[in-house]
Image (cartoon, rainbow, N blue to C red; front, side, top):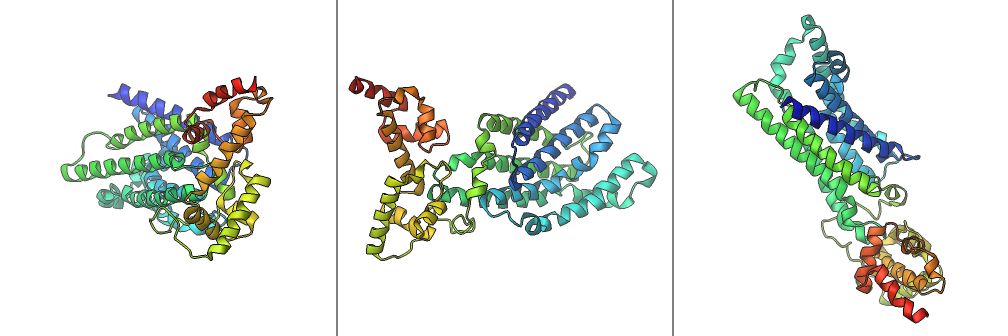
Length: 382
């Protein structure tokens, strides 16, 4: 059993280090990037702490004990604030979110630090810790509530994605969704094992290994997912383009924005203005184009533009903009010197931001893959 735990902890540490390398590689770190660092660095310390416990490395165990002991309390608010960071405004992030860490700081000062002193100097062991020990087993429930709240907030945001972003899909936030679901599962396991230990008694070995093992598997999965799709791991374009008046996580649960009534002639005029703008200015070439930025160019409220697209044109913002991008790709493919450029270069120049979304959207629109479509053009060019 020890060999298995040893192997898993080492794998967990390696995967966490790889994720941290991805995070540290970003030259400009937004608030949400820093929150992720504040999540994965403690995870690495937790793995080191359990590794030192397993191998009886006393000095290393003591030096990592505070983070390991209080991580269950801090992790909930951290993930909740991360989700807030990618679904809302972060200008006053510290001022608006410090309240979430009041209880964790109290726990750290009144529980974790005295417990460390008690471990290091047995004669100074705090008697009250033994008295409240059964209650401490359920401390993870504090974070559990934050996990659920964050998941609900993310779900509401995911429903609005296609109506506000041109290069972001529901599935592009699945990384975060899986992270929260994994945290909920691990918290549930911890609560169940804690209840079992309170009822049955001491299990004879550290019960926390029941939780640390699924944490390792979760980190391994997230590491693979994040490394293979680093754009999803850190969707930085969200942070610069988001407008809270458009992306409101507290909006009703309907997937489409609320309907607004506008004069039909006025909307017809707006449709013509939008079409003219798309043909002449080609704003869709901006890979980070959002509903808000396009409405600013048109000098109309974003809700009005959203109504025009969803009700008058029966299209989401995502589908509308990417339709133009597909046509731009097709136009560039038909140029005489198109063979000088790769399909991916043409796609990026046309406003697409990733190879996978380009291939999927193009095939959905033309029923052909980009390469097959290009091959069809060859005979007609000769």
